[in-house]
Image (cartoon, rainbow over all chains, first blue to last red; front, side):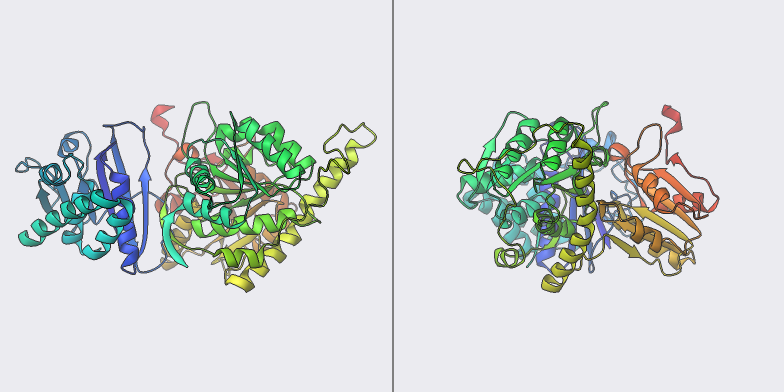
Length: 180
Length: 384
């Protein structure tokens, strides 16, 4: 079983990201489970959402403490929350930031930084980075195929919204693939 | 067909397939997504039902009572304080023998206010005469609604039923569910055939007062009906298994109990985590098993006593507490095991959304092996 933990702030779409990643994984023939850690439901508060992937039925219901993957939607969280806590050796951390990192990920963990806010602003016109980071996650982890992600986005966001979100995800996917 | 969907949406979809004629509910976290989805289906003419919007949960269940007495198949959903507000109507629904089905997205009771999961809400209604089903995952949460209608409407039962599934942990989780189709449900669930109904041309009364000459016998009849429901559940569960391949003919599930020294008894979604923990403990040589309770009312005492007959010790996990006594499941299990020497230890876990991990299950088994129990597990002593 592989596990993903998404850190974000209320309003950034972390729960939607977890759901759509699970939907895309399921389309790829994987058993997936996505769920939120609901805290205080207000904009700006730190939130977490989780995804599990396995080739068999997932029974476990506890939160994710030892993730294989971490997505940090907002790098300002890093000073408030120990977002890297428990990450497995060999794991991948994706941080949305335009800056060079002034923090360290644990030994044996791969750090990928991407300026998802900039991509989202240019593509969607709003600094909502969840769909952009899904593209980065698809490229970095290989857990979901881009075509499946595209389908999931198309079903969730109708019309032009769908096209734009797919474009944002694709851009991030290409950036991460190109860097690899 | 297998699809990945949110628990609440899967429940709303299966409820629609059960063709309720009247839906009345009041939104409350974490149940809201169910009734939102049903309201949308009614508004979009995808569900041919009357959706009665009301000012609160007491009115919601009262509307359901009226509609059910008039001969309609009805549905509601609630949780926590919403269910508490329905309290008096719950007893009326059972006393009038109305087969109302209500989903409970289990949530803790205030005060202090908590939107998170435990099972105190529905457990507190255990004496109301409603049948109570508890789902481990969203597959069961959907399937049990179809079975609940069949059982509740059976003329030898005629009782309301709560289908309970853990709030957030299941209601807000996306996972694959093998959804029945409309044709499947139509094949399994016959049209509601009321035993009696309100009819202006042939007037009768429901729920009038009973003097001391009759009330005692009324309660006896309701108790008998709840007990009779056990056999009907097993039959309906078996039929479901024959038709769709998922067998619900037992009110309990035994997991790796064959040679278990320590038997865990639990209910709801935590049982998935328990099963994973058991596999790990088994791999390290510990003989641990699980008896999962799927139906809490009627309580399957005989099945549980049989399942636990060879265990050296029993650890009962409760996501509720009858304050001043024990967890409700522990009380029932002790009653089922009366006269036997097996130690039965109770652990109150996961109240108000406290996460329960595999390592917690292993720690509880270790405590049980030492004979330490009857406690709130995992208290944060520093805040006491």
